[in-house]
Length: 129
Image 1 (cartoon, rainbow, N blue to C red):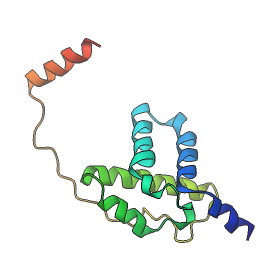
Image 2 (cartoon, rainbow, N blue to C red):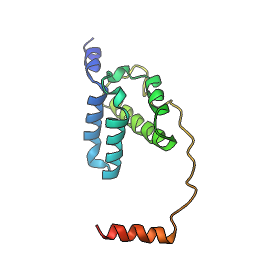
Image 3 (cartoon, rainbow, N blue to C red):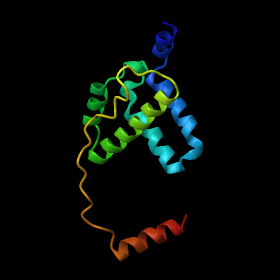
Image 4 (tube, one colour):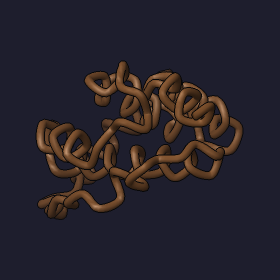
C-alpha cells in the first residue's frame, strides 16, 4: 500500500523534472533543450497526472496532436526514454512503458539541400556572431 501511495504522488511533471536533472550532465545542450521542450511544453496536458496513471491512449492522443511526423516521433522517443528511466528508478508502471507501443509516424526525407549561395549566407551570418 505504501508503494501505491508513493507512486500516486509522483506526477508526470515531477518525474519529467527529475529525468531532465538526471540526464542533463550526459546530454549535449541541444538535446537537453529538445528533451526539455518535449516534456515541459509539448506534454503539458499530462503534467498533473500521476505517472502511474498515464496510459498508452494518453500518449497516442498527445502524439496525434503533435505538429508533424518528425515532431511526433521525437516526442515519442523522449517520452519513451523518460518512462524507461522512471521504471529503472524503481517506480512501478502498471502497464509498462506507455510510449513504447505507440505508432511511429512515417517521415519523409527532405526534398532539397541548401545551395552553395545559401550555405555561404548561413556561414557569413554565423561568423558575424
